[in-house]
Image 1 (tube, rainbow, N blue to C red):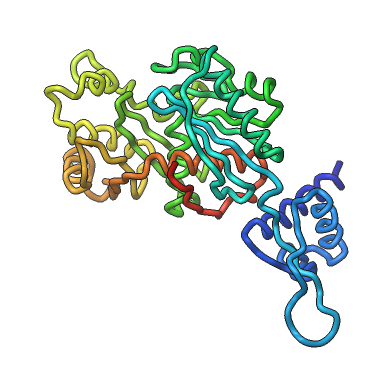
Image 2: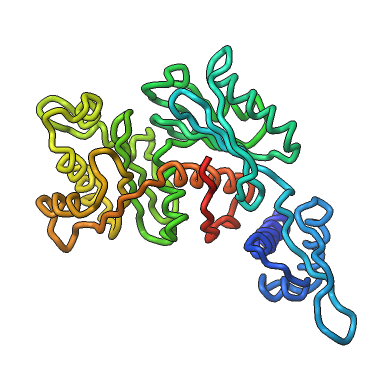
Length: 341
């Protein structure tokens, strides 16, 4: 057991180096990973047999026998990400380095959304036989792969979507709330993964949502309620969700958003916070000023207005899929922008 654990840890180290785009000799790989030359060489041989590592030509330079160089094979595995948008199922395929390969969307097929997801998986599996992981984003409460509550896509409510999909398609699956995926992608693209916390807010047609990242990982809580700011008390008997769904009639939208920022600030106190652009808000100055009415100036976060919710969302889902393929940190530190669909 100990030997297997050590070998697994060594393999993760080797993959981590190679997946950073390094082209190295066996000796260089051994030095970077802190391994002996025979150990590194044996791991390279095994990874080549599995198609994960490729030869990249002989080392340049004069004199002596030139050693072979090696690189990671980005085509050794593929990941599929799916999310729901305006009633459609949007999907994207990424290679083993997280680079976008193809994308598309389709309406729900006969039988509903789960059969549609499975149909997309099968189509992409035929196109990419090395498809090895699936990540699904859901605009609702998600805990441990179960959709606990959701407004628009009623057929998903109460289902253990992760278990259903894993059983049906035989792939490792991650099902995650849309805002938790978005904050994961946002933090990666901005280089914030090493921060104590990261927060993003989004006011969409479905109401407000908040994504929270703590020590580089999305936070959900035991019932997936973390970030469901729509449940916060609003005005009178209404909560923030109800206020948003009636179009914020009679409400100052900047003050509304400021109250959401304040709620995140008093629990996490992030130094900076991203708010995705809406028709109510195009610049940060007014929102920062409104926040200072409720928070001490020294504690108010710097606010960034972003138009890149979709890119952050897709990047986050891709990273979640990569985490399934390469658990243990190989994906950490690789901040790549995912192409917009």
